[in-house]
Length: 311
Image (cartoon, rainbow, N blue to C red; front, side, top):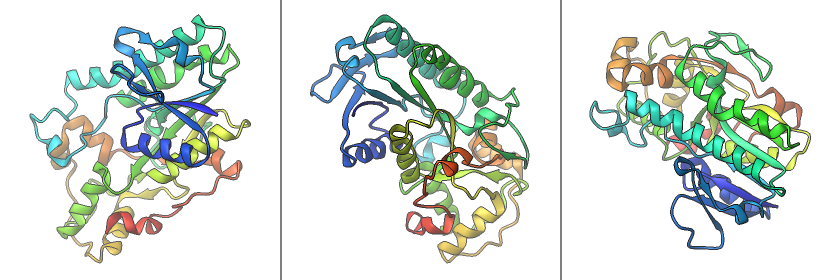
């Protein structure tokens, strides 16, 4: 299958591309500069431009691109480093996704030949705050949060237009993605190395996490299984309360778990008010019900199985 991938150079995108290629699919990468190679497709969501001819050659699209929600480096959380959620940053997060969705929809409508499968990134924050309630793909939204609005208005709702064209739509609602080299894993590793592991805020908030390898595996699984459509929770089958999560990481690294709870206001001062709430203090107990029912097998079903990513 010829698959177009946006965000192909990102932390998740690189692994998705490799997984697709290893499985025998031909990958075309969307790029925002002039395409230099046969496996590249030019597009510019902000300018509403795309290479129509190459677009029509695609059989499927996996859409991962968007302004990063969190900094890629720990120093990015510093007040003037540009990674915190300023008004400008939030605008880039929203419009980078909205413009991309709008461009794809306009392109699908403008041609007679188009991909029959469209898989888009999303986030399980689309559900909003549900405290410790178990959340599945059928759980209704609790609106009001910024990222809930972004996921609904930019990642998913616009794609209803493609359903009218009989395009199979899959919305991958990822949890907290973990893997060696990404910001979440780096922070957790650093805290444990410094023997500062302990509850963050109340510590009872649930973290729905997932290995980056399982994210890539899930995208491939959804691509190759025609019976899967609509929202799909891409999270491990083991959501954990934050304090239990940190205990496991500390145990993996042979470090102690004894530090006093870090007050919520300290976390918000350190990371930024809204970003601290999203990354650390907010919680969601999401279950990948649709993937499990379809027979998907997680490579890393438990946090302990990710040991190599933390040492």
